[in-house]
Amino acid sequence: MAILARSFAAAILLLSTTTFGFAANKVIIILDASGSMWAQIDGKPKLEIARESLRTVLQSVPAADEIGFMAYGHREKGSCDDIQLIVPPQAGSASAISAAADSMKFLGKTPLTAAVKQAAEALRYTEDKATVVLITDGLETCGGDPCALGKELEASGVDFTADVVGFGLTADEGKQIACLADNTGGKYIQASDEKALQEALVETVAAPAPAPGPAPAPAPEPAKSEFNFMPTVVLAEGGDPVTDGNAWEIYKAKSDGTRGDNITTEYGDYKANLEPGDYIIVARDGEAKVEQKIKIEAGQVYKPLFTLNAGTLILHPRPSQGADVVSGAAVVIAYPGVGNPPTYYGDAKVVLPAGDEKVTVTIGQGVVTETIPLAAGRVIDKDIIVGVGHVLANAYYAAGGDKADGSGIGFKVLKAKKKIDGTRDEVTYAYGPDSKFDLPPDDYVLIATVDLAVVEQPFSVKVGEFQDLKVAMDAGVLAVTAPGTSKIEIFETKKDINGNRKSIGYAYDEKYQAAIAAGDYAVVSEKSDNSKKEGTVTVKAGERVELTVP
Figure (tube, rainbow, N blue to C red):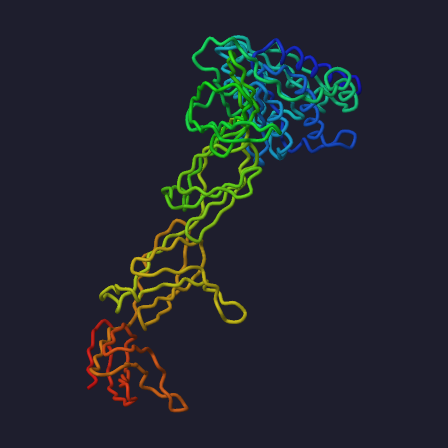
C-alpha cells in the first residue's frame, strides 16, 4: 500500500513539474466527484485527501501554465450527464480550482469516459497539444469504453495525452482504466495510501511558498509615447482587457498614503498624461473595483495592470418558466463585501466581485432568493424563476353589467386561511379599475370596494396562470339631492334590537352620490338648525336611482 502511494505521490510531482510545467501548454484536471469518494482511507474521506492534494500540487504549477478543472457526479445523483467544466484552462487558476474543489458535493455516478472526451474537446485536441489528468476512485458506470476512447483521441488528436490516477483502486480495477493512459502515451498511477502521498508531496512540491510581498511598482519605460500613463484592467488573471463599461478614478495621494483630491474620472480605454507625483488609481467595472498606488516620474511611461478578480452575472427575472422577462422585477444582489446591496430592474447584467452572489428577485408579491457562485473571469447567464400567477381585477355593478370606474374603487388581497383569532393576513392592495396582482400560488380572498359597496370573492392562484377576476358588486348608484341642507346621511331601513339604524355613509353637502349595495335605504337630510327630513329609496343592482329630499 505504501509503495503504491509513493508511486502516486511521485506521479503527481511528475505531472506538476513536467506535464503541467513544460510538456503541455494547456491541461484540464478531471476530478471524480461521485458518491464513492466519501469512502475513507486511514479514517479520512478520500474526497478530503483529493482536495488537499490538489491544493498542494497546484502551488507548484508555474504561473504561466493554463490549467482547467472539470468534475463529474457533483450535482446530481444517478445522472450520467452530470459533467461540468468548472474552471476553463487559464493562467493563475490555482485558487479558483482549489475553491471549486472545496465547495463541491460528492454524490453522483462515474461517467469518466464522457468526461475525458469533453475535456479533450474543450482543449481543442484536434488543433493543439492537449493533456488531461483524470483522478478517479471508481470505474466507468455509464457505459463508456475508456480503452476505445484512448485509441480514438490518440488517432485524431494533434498531441493528446491522458494521465490517469487510480485513487484507492485495486490492481485488477486499475487494469480496466489503465488502457486509457496507455493508448494515449500517458501514465497510469495507482495510489492507495495517504501518508506516503503526503510525505512525497511535502518533500518535493508542498514546501510552503514564501509569503507574497507588496506588489512591485509598475516598471517605468522610456518615454516614447504621447501618453505617460496607460493602465489596463482585466476581470481575472490572464483575461482579456476590459475597454467598455469600466471606469477610472484618479486621485492625488496624500502624504499618509490615503486618497486626496479627485483629479478626474474617465471611462473605457484610458490613456493620459499625468503630472509627476503620487496617485491612487481606482479601476471599476460594475460593482467590482481595485486600487493601486502609482508614483509618476518625469520622462517615464507607466502601464500598470489592474486585476478585478470579478465575473459577470446576467439575470433574467421571469414570473414562470418560459414567460417573458418582467421589466419591473426588482433584482437585489448581495455580493461579497457589500453592506447595502444594489437593486436592478428587469434584465440585469452586472460585473461582481468573485464569490457567492445572493440574488433576491421580487415580482409583485412573489420573492425568490438564490445563491450563485461566481468565479473570476466567468460569465453566468441565468433565468431566475419567481413562480407567480397573474390576476386582473375589476368590479362590475351587476354580473354582465357596466364596469365600475372612478376614484372609489379599491381591491385588497387577503390570505384565505384564517388565523386562530379569525382574522386573515393582508397580502397587498390596489386602487382603480384594471388592478393587477402577481401572487405566489395559494388560496386568497379579494375584497372589492366601490364607494359604499363591499364584496368578498375567493380565488386561487397557480404559477404561470392568468385570471381575469370580474367581481359582481350587486350594487347600484344612489344620487341624493337635498337643497338647503348641510348634511346627507344614508341608513339601513332595518333597525337593530335597540331601535337604531346602521349608518352607511354621509356627506356634508347638498348633493351626495355613491355606489351602494342593492337594497332599501333611508336618506336623512339635516339643516344647520338641526332640523331633519327623511326619505326612503330602493337601489337595484346595475341601476341608477335619484332621490330628492325636499
